[in-house]
Image 1: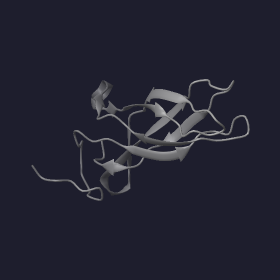
Image 2: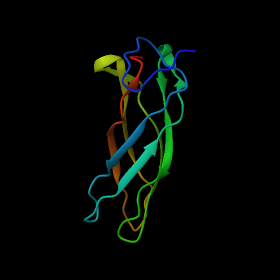
Image 3: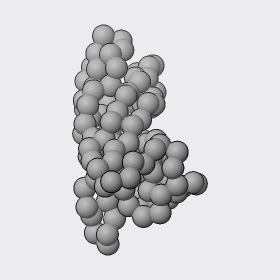
Image 4: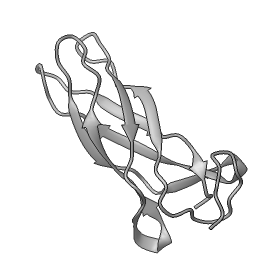
Amino acid sequence: MKKVGKSDFVSGFVPHHNHGSVDYTSVEDGHVHQYLDVTSTPIPSQEGQHIHYTEGYVVLKDEHYHYYKAYSGPAIPVVNGMHVHYYDFYTSEDDAHRHRIKGANQPVPGNK
């Protein structure tokens, strides 16, 4: 089996991959939380696409944290034979507020 590096162009689907994210939530109640995330491996979806599941906690801030769990959108091809997934969801409500998390995760090899 050929090894695929993080910068290799790959046409098609790369099985058993996951995506990482390092980003910030929306500003609510005067603060943001950072989150560090790694998705599940691919989950097949309709029309030959795939999505990813994620769950975790944001980094502690203002003496509280929030939990999240969500599914990504389908793969979006980007440059150099890579793809990303868009996500848009809300954290749990804690300390009388919740935060929105949206954006795209880090690109990985495979344009599907």
